Length: 251
Length: 292
Image (cartoon, rainbow over all chains, first blue to last red; front, top):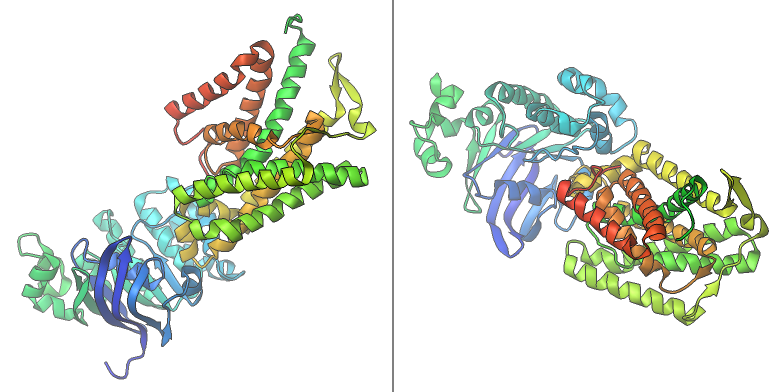
């Protein structure tokens, strides 16, 4: 661990939604250039963790540092402007806007979109085809692509991606995986993902959050070898096929 | 009432309905954008309409220039809108109960302040000679000033439509109406956008008031409150956050008020509220989707 640059540090994070104490001590490190997967059961606090990093959820105590800079007290748009991109669980698409306008909203500095649209549309040709169509009329998979494309409009240091495979057909999940690999080439990624196959495909390291606390972290390959960890924290059993979904478990 | 129904009469009622609709549009469009973007039901909006009328009157009396009066009225509304958002409403985003209480209080304060300056009575709003002339439309005389209000409303609608549809600010506002949190997450200072929309909404409402003074030929402290009910009906009919919806809703309500008010004076409000109830039953989100 020692020599790798830490881009993001989350230290003893406590966060609240209204009166509910959702995060009760989440700590993990994210190394620059890697994909860190946040795992855990439904309601464990994964989404709240991502939202806290971006300043969208109120932090009670704890520390979040981006490249050594404390983000506590910063407003979401200020954090985003430090080079933090966000793909939310519900995709956050502006359904009344066209595909092109969705990308324009994301443009932080004039010229970014023009400079990067070639690469975006090469990766997502459907978005080019439907660039004048209202985003609300796109399919679920296309909306997910748009959500990912939107964070590619600007150069980002850190991407927070929340369950990109949710509600998508298996073939589309593979496409999402490819897209994530592409965006991970130029940014560090924190990925919340319930789909273990996709997580394994994309991730370098993992952190498990359970009941609002981080309970384990380590290299991604570790999960395939630890059936108890899968069963206890992720609800994966032989019967539900979770293990078979892990590519290295088949080897 | 009592006069025979003739084509010229119907044309005149139609044009009057359009003028009323224009005034409703000027107050309702800001109300709709403010509610659509910030979820703030701004009960003080009518106060800005009234202030626009009185500031317009004061400037007109001082300079004799109607265009200057309209500009000054709009500027007063913009300034009051900025003070309202930055000074009072900003700490209360998300707290609807307090917002309603606060904006109701602000409305009362605005009205009291206005009466301290100008008194509680009606004040006549003289109009320049050119605005008192009439032109003949299908044989019926029609006040030139009313056509000016129509043109003004059309120009404002076109400007707002283009700003919302083509400019980056407009795209961000429309995105914010759909999902303000996501706009922030993309690096946009939504707080600043909120202020701009409040300023724009305040300017439009006050411009409506400044334009309404010469239309009614008088100003009075309750004139905003009387228009506000129609504006709320317009916003519900048109759809929260939709300027096109506000325009269409305003014309519907204005025309209904002109025609029903002429033939069945007691029924004008009933018909408009009935229209609103019908829209709520059939299409609760309003006739137009939010966003433009």
